[in-house]
Image (cartoon, rainbow, N blue to C red; front, side, top):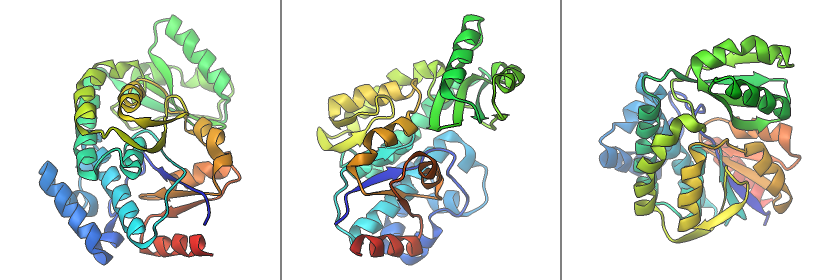
Length: 309
């Protein structure tokens, strides 16, 4: 059997209709969506499958993405009993990874990330927070420009290290917008301010940290399979480590690219669970280890077939 890692996408991977194929073809999916709806008092069937504005709001986006990833994982595990060498998620996806590791029950995780989204929104409310994607510029140059601009009073930080030549910043939207030309002059091919009102993984979320900690303490189990931290790129597998690292994750950049590079030699295959192929696309540019995805029943059967070859 191949050595595999399970990986999970984060915010930005959501689309209306995600998970519908699972819902229409699996009783497991139906039961999980009903249970999640009952737990949070949110109509997840409507949120996932019908046109609505809530799916783009952080406090709804996060539990929706985690639910779909957890459904994909649960159906896969029902058909294929394989234990990953480690699990890894991108930003919010780290909480889906914690479900896969046994650190969190999926319903507890859905409530946890719903609250996480509310705390993030509250931390950024009225503050003009935003994010910017940079393409075609190296990390060191971006870090240097951000440091120089912070010394001048601007609030801008590297937030997501996705792959070489693609990095996302967080901070005040006005400050980010004012630096579009600065980053292009420094070598960026594109500098795009994103349609977001939350600034993830930067110091603007400091107030969310203490709000989240009691729920981490309540819901996390004591021990679990190894999870790769977005903050450190190292594996952790105890509750105390998880509380420290998941709290720090709110205000620290996501080192996704660095995490894949640090652990690629441990596995033969990455399996992405959830909507779309965001991480599969990034991994093509980061590693030679192949990535497959479980996003509907067809891809599920394809992945199981590949594992059994």
